[in-house]
Length: 364
Image (cartoon, rainbow, N blue to C red; front, top):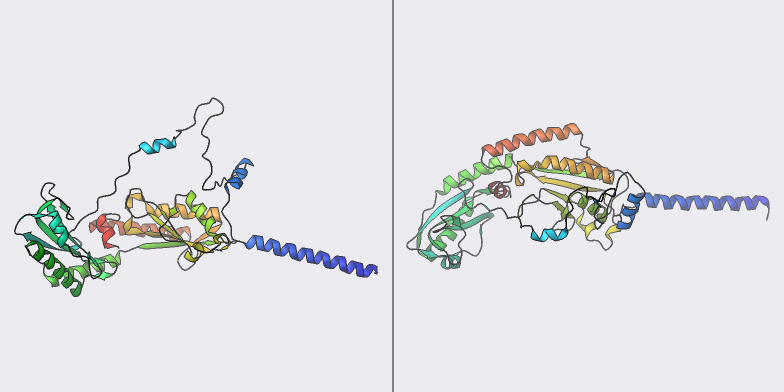
Protein backbone atom coordinates (compact mmCIF):
# COMPACT_ATOMS: atom_id res chain seq x y z
CA UNK A 1 0.00 0.00 0.00
CA UNK A 2 1.49 3.33 -1.05
CA UNK A 3 1.83 6.32 1.26
CA UNK A 4 -0.77 8.14 -0.85
CA UNK A 5 -3.37 5.40 -0.28
CA UNK A 6 -2.56 5.28 3.42
CA UNK A 7 -3.03 9.04 3.63
CA UNK A 8 -6.42 8.82 1.95
CA UNK A 9 -7.53 6.12 4.41
CA UNK A 10 -6.43 8.21 7.39
CA UNK A 11 -8.09 11.34 6.00
CA UNK A 12 -11.32 9.43 5.39
CA UNK A 13 -11.27 8.04 8.92
CA UNK A 14 -10.77 11.54 10.36
CA UNK A 15 -13.67 12.91 8.29
CA UNK A 16 -15.89 10.03 9.42
CA UNK A 17 -15.03 10.67 13.07
CA UNK A 18 -15.78 14.37 12.64
CA UNK A 19 -19.16 13.65 11.02
CA UNK A 20 -20.14 11.17 13.75
CA UNK A 21 -19.07 13.60 16.48
CA UNK A 22 -20.98 16.46 14.84
CA UNK A 23 -24.13 14.36 14.54
CA UNK A 24 -23.86 13.31 18.17
CA UNK A 25 -23.34 16.92 19.26
CA UNK A 26 -26.29 18.11 17.15
CA UNK A 27 -28.52 15.38 18.59
CA UNK A 28 -27.51 16.32 22.13
CA UNK A 29 -27.99 20.03 21.42
CA UNK A 30 -31.44 19.59 19.90
CA UNK A 31 -32.72 16.91 22.28
CA UNK A 32 -35.48 18.14 24.63
CA UNK A 33 -34.25 19.30 28.00
CA UNK A 34 -35.05 16.82 30.73
CA UNK A 35 -35.80 17.16 34.41
CA UNK A 36 -32.64 16.96 36.49
CA UNK A 37 -32.38 14.12 39.03
CA UNK A 38 -31.86 15.15 42.63
CA UNK A 39 -28.27 13.89 42.58
CA UNK A 40 -27.30 16.15 39.71
CA UNK A 41 -28.91 19.18 41.34
CA UNK A 42 -27.06 18.49 44.58
CA UNK A 43 -23.75 18.12 42.71
CA UNK A 44 -24.31 21.42 40.93
CA UNK A 45 -24.85 23.15 44.26
CA UNK A 46 -21.73 21.53 45.73
CA UNK A 47 -19.64 22.76 42.79
CA UNK A 48 -20.52 26.34 43.74
CA UNK A 49 -22.78 27.06 40.79
CA UNK A 50 -24.37 30.48 40.68
CA UNK A 51 -27.87 29.03 40.37
CA UNK A 52 -29.15 26.06 42.36
CA UNK A 53 -31.83 23.98 40.65
CA UNK A 54 -33.18 21.50 43.19
CA UNK A 55 -35.33 18.63 42.00
CA UNK A 56 -38.87 18.11 43.22
CA UNK A 57 -37.69 15.67 45.90
CA UNK A 58 -34.57 17.59 46.93
CA UNK A 59 -33.57 17.61 50.59
CA UNK A 60 -34.63 20.63 52.66
CA UNK A 61 -32.14 23.44 53.10
CA UNK A 62 -30.01 23.41 56.24
CA UNK A 63 -30.96 26.48 58.27
CA UNK A 64 -28.43 25.92 61.04
CA UNK A 65 -25.58 28.34 61.78
CA UNK A 66 -22.33 26.39 61.85
CA UNK A 67 -20.56 29.12 63.79
CA UNK A 68 -22.67 29.30 66.93
CA UNK A 69 -25.09 26.40 66.55
CA UNK A 70 -28.10 28.72 66.53
CA UNK A 71 -30.78 28.42 63.83
CA UNK A 72 -30.63 31.14 61.21
CA UNK A 73 -34.40 31.23 60.63
CA UNK A 74 -37.58 29.60 61.79
CA UNK A 75 -37.13 25.82 61.61
CA UNK A 76 -40.38 24.05 60.77
CA UNK A 77 -41.09 20.60 62.11
CA UNK A 78 -43.20 18.73 59.51
CA UNK A 79 -45.21 17.23 62.36
CA UNK A 80 -46.44 20.71 63.26
CA UNK A 81 -48.48 20.72 60.07
CA UNK A 82 -50.77 18.11 61.59
CA UNK A 83 -51.83 20.61 64.25
CA UNK A 84 -52.59 23.48 61.88
CA UNK A 85 -56.30 24.21 61.30
CA UNK A 86 -57.60 23.50 57.82
CA UNK A 87 -58.60 26.61 55.85
CA UNK A 88 -62.32 27.08 55.53
CA UNK A 89 -63.78 26.98 52.05
CA UNK A 90 -65.44 30.18 50.92
CA UNK A 91 -69.19 30.15 51.44
CA UNK A 92 -70.82 30.03 48.03
CA UNK A 93 -73.26 32.78 47.23
CA UNK A 94 -76.86 31.75 46.70
CA UNK A 95 -79.49 33.18 44.39
CA UNK A 96 -79.11 36.91 43.80
CA UNK A 97 -81.45 39.22 41.93
CA UNK A 98 -78.42 40.84 40.28
CA UNK A 99 -77.82 37.84 38.02
CA UNK A 100 -80.82 35.56 38.64
CA UNK A 101 -84.51 35.57 37.74
CA UNK A 102 -86.19 34.66 41.04
CA UNK A 103 -89.66 33.31 41.72
CA UNK A 104 -90.97 33.29 45.36
CA UNK A 105 -92.69 30.05 46.45
CA UNK A 106 -95.21 30.20 49.30
CA UNK A 107 -96.23 26.78 50.74
CA UNK A 108 -99.54 26.36 52.54
CA UNK A 109 -97.79 24.92 55.62
CA UNK A 110 -94.32 24.28 57.00
CA UNK A 111 -92.35 21.91 54.77
CA UNK A 112 -89.62 19.60 56.05
CA UNK A 113 -86.28 19.48 54.32
CA UNK A 114 -86.78 15.80 53.51
CA UNK A 115 -90.03 16.53 51.65
CA UNK A 116 -88.43 19.42 49.79
CA UNK A 117 -85.45 17.29 48.77
CA UNK A 118 -87.74 14.58 47.42
CA UNK A 119 -89.61 17.17 45.33
CA UNK A 120 -86.52 18.80 43.76
CA UNK A 121 -86.14 18.29 40.00
CA UNK A 122 -83.50 15.74 38.95
CA UNK A 123 -81.36 18.31 37.15
CA UNK A 124 -80.08 21.69 38.29
CA UNK A 125 -80.13 23.37 34.90
CA UNK A 126 -82.71 25.01 32.65
CA UNK A 127 -81.20 24.61 29.21
CA UNK A 128 -77.64 25.88 29.56
CA UNK A 129 -78.35 28.00 32.66
CA UNK A 130 -77.91 26.99 36.31
CA UNK A 131 -81.20 26.52 38.16
CA UNK A 132 -81.66 26.32 41.94
CA UNK A 133 -84.32 26.11 44.64
CA UNK A 134 -83.61 27.47 48.12
CA UNK A 135 -85.49 27.39 51.40
CA UNK A 136 -85.44 29.98 54.17
CA UNK A 137 -84.21 28.15 57.25
CA UNK A 138 -86.52 29.07 60.11
CA UNK A 139 -83.88 29.13 62.83
CA UNK A 140 -80.89 30.62 60.97
CA UNK A 141 -83.07 32.92 58.83
CA UNK A 142 -80.82 32.23 55.87
CA UNK A 143 -81.52 30.94 52.40
CA UNK A 144 -80.02 27.52 51.76
CA UNK A 145 -80.39 24.43 49.63
CA UNK A 146 -82.98 22.26 51.41
CA UNK A 147 -81.37 20.14 54.12
CA UNK A 148 -82.69 17.00 55.86
CA UNK A 149 -84.20 17.73 59.26
CA UNK A 150 -84.70 21.45 58.60
CA UNK A 151 -88.10 23.16 58.34
CA UNK A 152 -89.10 25.82 55.81
CA UNK A 153 -92.01 28.24 55.46
CA UNK A 154 -90.64 30.01 52.39
CA UNK A 155 -88.86 28.89 49.22
CA UNK A 156 -87.52 30.61 46.13
CA UNK A 157 -86.49 29.29 42.74
CA UNK A 158 -84.06 31.01 40.44
CA UNK A 159 -82.42 30.63 37.05
CA UNK A 160 -79.23 32.44 36.06
CA UNK A 161 -79.77 35.22 33.54
CA UNK A 162 -76.49 34.80 31.65
CA UNK A 163 -73.21 32.94 31.55
CA UNK A 164 -70.53 32.32 28.94
CA UNK A 165 -72.98 30.33 26.81
CA UNK A 166 -75.11 33.47 26.32
CA UNK A 167 -78.26 35.08 27.68
CA UNK A 168 -81.31 33.32 29.09
CA UNK A 169 -83.85 32.84 26.28
CA UNK A 170 -87.60 32.22 26.22
CA UNK A 171 -87.24 28.44 25.93
CA UNK A 172 -84.93 28.26 28.94
CA UNK A 173 -87.26 30.53 30.94
CA UNK A 174 -90.19 28.23 30.09
CA UNK A 175 -88.19 25.22 31.32
CA UNK A 176 -87.48 27.13 34.52
CA UNK A 177 -91.22 27.75 34.96
CA UNK A 178 -92.11 24.10 34.42
CA UNK A 179 -89.53 22.80 36.88
CA UNK A 180 -90.48 25.35 39.51
CA UNK A 181 -94.19 24.67 39.11
CA UNK A 182 -93.64 20.92 39.44
CA UNK A 183 -91.75 21.51 42.71
CA UNK A 184 -94.47 23.82 44.02
CA UNK A 185 -97.20 21.32 43.18
CA UNK A 186 -95.30 18.58 44.98
CA UNK A 187 -95.07 20.54 48.27
CA UNK A 188 -98.45 22.27 48.00
CA UNK A 189 -97.31 25.82 47.29
CA UNK A 190 -98.10 28.80 45.09
CA UNK A 191 -95.49 30.46 42.84
CA UNK A 192 -95.22 34.09 41.79
CA UNK A 193 -93.27 34.08 38.52
CA UNK A 194 -91.63 37.24 37.17
CA UNK A 195 -92.56 38.53 33.72
CA UNK A 196 -90.76 36.50 31.07
CA UNK A 197 -90.17 39.36 28.62
CA UNK A 198 -88.75 41.56 31.37
CA UNK A 199 -86.37 38.86 32.59
CA UNK A 200 -85.21 37.96 29.07
CA UNK A 201 -84.49 41.64 28.43
CA UNK A 202 -82.50 41.80 31.67
CA UNK A 203 -80.62 38.70 30.58
CA UNK A 204 -79.63 40.24 27.26
CA UNK A 205 -78.41 43.42 28.92
CA UNK A 206 -76.38 41.45 31.46
CA UNK A 207 -74.95 39.23 28.74
CA UNK A 208 -73.91 42.33 26.76
CA UNK A 209 -72.10 43.71 29.80
CA UNK A 210 -70.42 40.37 30.49
CA UNK A 211 -69.29 39.99 26.88
CA UNK A 212 -67.67 43.42 26.95
CA UNK A 213 -65.89 42.78 30.26
CA UNK A 214 -64.84 39.15 29.95
CA UNK A 215 -61.03 38.98 29.89
CA UNK A 216 -59.12 35.72 29.56
CA UNK A 217 -55.41 36.35 29.03
CA UNK A 218 -53.10 33.74 27.52
CA UNK A 219 -49.36 34.18 27.06
CA UNK A 220 -47.07 31.72 25.26
CA UNK A 221 -43.59 30.76 26.43
CA UNK A 222 -41.56 29.60 23.42
CA UNK A 223 -38.23 27.78 23.54
CA UNK A 224 -35.35 29.82 22.08
CA UNK A 225 -33.18 26.83 21.13
CA UNK A 226 -33.48 23.36 22.65
CA UNK A 227 -37.00 22.02 23.17
CA UNK A 228 -38.33 20.94 26.58
CA UNK A 229 -39.56 17.59 27.81
CA UNK A 230 -42.80 17.48 29.85
CA UNK A 231 -40.80 16.51 32.93
CA UNK A 232 -38.52 19.51 32.49
CA UNK A 233 -41.52 21.84 32.28
CA UNK A 234 -43.17 20.23 35.31
CA UNK A 235 -39.99 20.48 37.38
CA UNK A 236 -39.43 24.16 36.67
CA UNK A 237 -43.11 25.04 37.15
CA UNK A 238 -43.30 23.11 40.43
CA UNK A 239 -40.42 25.18 41.82
CA UNK A 240 -42.61 28.25 41.34
CA UNK A 241 -45.65 26.78 43.11
CA UNK A 242 -47.57 25.09 40.29
CA UNK A 243 -49.21 21.74 41.00
CA UNK A 244 -50.64 19.09 38.70
CA UNK A 245 -54.08 19.86 37.33
CA UNK A 246 -57.01 17.55 36.77
CA UNK A 247 -56.23 17.13 33.06
CA UNK A 248 -53.06 15.78 31.37
CA UNK A 249 -50.80 18.59 30.22
CA UNK A 250 -52.13 21.08 32.78
CA UNK A 251 -50.68 22.58 35.95
CA UNK A 252 -52.32 25.22 38.13
CA UNK A 253 -51.18 27.82 40.63
CA UNK A 254 -53.58 27.35 43.58
CA UNK A 255 -55.56 30.28 44.93
CA UNK A 256 -54.87 31.66 48.39
CA UNK A 257 -58.14 30.27 49.78
CA UNK A 258 -59.46 26.73 49.77
CA UNK A 259 -62.18 25.81 47.31
CA UNK A 260 -61.47 28.72 44.94
CA UNK A 261 -60.52 28.54 41.26
CA UNK A 262 -56.76 28.50 40.55
CA UNK A 263 -55.01 31.82 40.11
CA UNK A 264 -53.12 30.79 36.96
CA UNK A 265 -53.08 27.85 34.58
CA UNK A 266 -50.11 26.39 32.71
CA UNK A 267 -50.90 24.21 29.68
CA UNK A 268 -48.83 22.14 27.29
CA UNK A 269 -49.50 19.38 24.77
CA UNK A 270 -51.76 16.78 26.42
CA UNK A 271 -50.61 14.10 23.97
CA UNK A 272 -47.02 14.69 25.03
CA UNK A 273 -48.00 14.33 28.68
CA UNK A 274 -49.68 10.97 27.99
CA UNK A 275 -47.00 9.53 25.66
CA UNK A 276 -45.29 6.24 26.51
CA UNK A 277 -41.94 8.01 27.01
CA UNK A 278 -42.67 11.66 27.89
CA UNK A 279 -38.98 12.47 28.38
CA UNK A 280 -38.38 11.84 24.67
CA UNK A 281 -41.21 14.17 23.66
CA UNK A 282 -40.25 17.66 22.53
CA UNK A 283 -42.27 20.71 23.57
CA UNK A 284 -41.53 23.96 21.77
CA UNK A 285 -43.98 26.10 23.73
CA UNK A 286 -46.29 26.22 26.73
CA UNK A 287 -49.08 28.65 27.65
CA UNK A 288 -49.84 30.63 30.82
CA UNK A 289 -53.46 31.74 31.30
CA UNK A 290 -55.36 34.06 33.62
CA UNK A 291 -59.17 34.10 33.82
CA UNK A 292 -59.48 37.66 35.13
CA UNK A 293 -63.03 37.50 36.53
CA UNK A 294 -62.29 34.37 38.54
CA UNK A 295 -59.44 35.82 40.65
CA UNK A 296 -59.77 38.66 43.20
CA UNK A 297 -58.10 41.93 42.29
CA UNK A 298 -56.32 42.02 45.65
CA UNK A 299 -54.34 38.92 44.68
CA UNK A 300 -52.69 40.95 41.85
CA UNK A 301 -52.88 37.98 39.49
CA UNK A 302 -51.50 39.80 36.44
CA UNK A 303 -48.41 40.92 38.33
CA UNK A 304 -47.99 37.34 39.48
CA UNK A 305 -48.43 36.13 35.89
CA UNK A 306 -45.65 38.46 34.67
CA UNK A 307 -43.36 37.45 37.51
CA UNK A 308 -43.77 33.72 36.91
CA UNK A 309 -43.53 34.07 33.13
CA UNK A 310 -40.23 35.90 33.49
CA UNK A 311 -38.92 33.31 35.94
CA UNK A 312 -39.84 30.44 33.61
CA UNK A 313 -38.28 32.18 30.61
CA UNK A 314 -35.02 32.65 32.49
CA UNK A 315 -34.96 29.11 33.88
CA UNK A 316 -35.86 27.35 30.61
CA UNK A 317 -34.30 29.75 28.06
CA UNK A 318 -37.62 30.83 26.61
CA UNK A 319 -39.21 33.98 25.26
CA UNK A 320 -42.61 35.41 26.20
CA UNK A 321 -45.00 35.78 23.26
CA UNK A 322 -48.64 36.59 22.61
CA UNK A 323 -51.15 34.06 21.33
CA UNK A 324 -49.91 34.57 17.76
CA UNK A 325 -46.29 33.87 18.64
CA UNK A 326 -45.08 37.49 18.49
CA UNK A 327 -42.64 38.47 21.30
CA UNK A 328 -44.21 40.70 23.96
CA UNK A 329 -42.21 43.80 24.90
CA UNK A 330 -42.44 45.32 28.36
CA UNK A 331 -44.38 48.28 26.94
CA UNK A 332 -47.18 45.96 25.77
CA UNK A 333 -47.41 44.35 29.21
CA UNK A 334 -47.72 47.76 30.87
CA UNK A 335 -50.59 48.65 28.55
CA UNK A 336 -52.36 45.40 29.43
CA UNK A 337 -51.93 46.13 33.14
CA UNK A 338 -53.51 49.59 32.69
CA UNK A 339 -56.47 48.14 30.78
CA UNK A 340 -57.01 45.53 33.49
CA UNK A 341 -57.23 48.19 36.19
CA UNK A 342 -60.00 49.90 34.22
CA UNK A 343 -61.76 46.56 33.81
CA UNK A 344 -61.58 45.90 37.55
CA UNK A 345 -63.11 49.33 38.23
CA UNK A 346 -66.01 48.67 35.87
CA UNK A 347 -66.71 45.28 37.46
CA UNK A 348 -66.65 46.90 40.90
CA UNK A 349 -69.15 49.55 39.80
CA UNK A 350 -71.53 46.80 38.61
CA UNK A 351 -71.15 44.95 41.96
CA UNK A 352 -69.55 42.06 40.09
CA UNK A 353 -66.03 42.42 41.43
CA UNK A 354 -63.52 39.91 40.11
CA UNK A 355 -63.21 36.82 42.29
CA UNK A 356 -66.59 37.20 44.01
CA UNK A 357 -69.11 34.36 43.93
CA UNK A 358 -71.39 36.33 41.59
CA UNK A 359 -68.58 37.11 39.14
CA UNK A 360 -67.42 33.49 39.10
CA UNK A 361 -70.98 32.37 38.35
CA UNK A 362 -71.53 34.94 35.60
CA UNK A 363 -68.18 34.41 33.89
CA UNK A 364 -68.45 30.63 33.78
